[in-house]
Length: 282
Image (tube, rainbow, N blue to C red; front, side, top):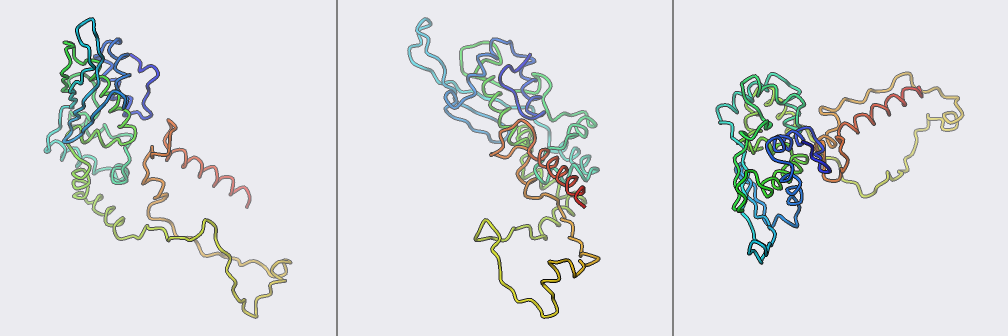
C-alpha cells in the first residue's frame, strides 16, 4: 500500500510506516492519517519505549454518541533484550564509521547489518513487531486511532531516528554508554571531550577592520604594484579533527530544514562543488 499524500523524509521513517500499512486495510489508513495531527491528539507521552496517547474521536448521534469521545491508545514495539543489544553494539564496534555516526547522532546507512547478523532487526517488518491497543469500540486492530499514532511516530522518526532504539528498548543514554565501552568509541569520545569545539563569540556579523603599523622593511607600494614577489610557501591550515562538526551536530534533518533530502548530504555536495570551482581558479 502507499502512504498517499503522507510520506516520510527518511528511509527509516518510510520503513516504519510501510510495516504498519502492510497489515492495515486502506480504509483505516485513510482515516488514520487525519488522526496524526495536534487537532486530534490531545495528549502524547513516550517513555520506556512505549507511546501512550489520548485521541479525540468523533460524535455519532446515529450510534447514540452525542459528545466527542476521547480514546486511550498505546503503541509499543517488541523489545530487544539488554544482552542482545550488547551483542549488536559489539558488532557495530567493528566499523569506525558507524560508531562515529552514532556518537554524532546520525543513523548509519548499514545499521541493519549487525542486527541481521544476529537474527534480529531494528526496523519493523510485520505486525509481530508491534504491541498495540485502543479503548475505542472498533474490534479490528489496528484501528484508525492506532494508525494515526503510528503516522505521528513516523514523522518524529524523521527528526530523531534514535527513537527507533528507544522503541526497541535502548535509550540514547544507554546507547552512548555502550559505545563508550568499545575501544574505538572510547577513543572518539575522548577526542570530542578534550578538543575545544566552542566557536569564539563575536560582537558583529562582519569582521571589523583593525589598524596596524607596518614594519619599515615592508614596501606597501611595491606589494600592490607587483614589484614584491609573493612568498613561495604558505603554512598549511591544520585539518579539523571532525570535519563540518557544527553541520553534523544538527543531524540529517535539523528543525529549520524542511526538505526531504538530508541537510548533511546537501552541504557535502555544496562544499564539493565549491572546492572544485576553487581549484579551477589556480
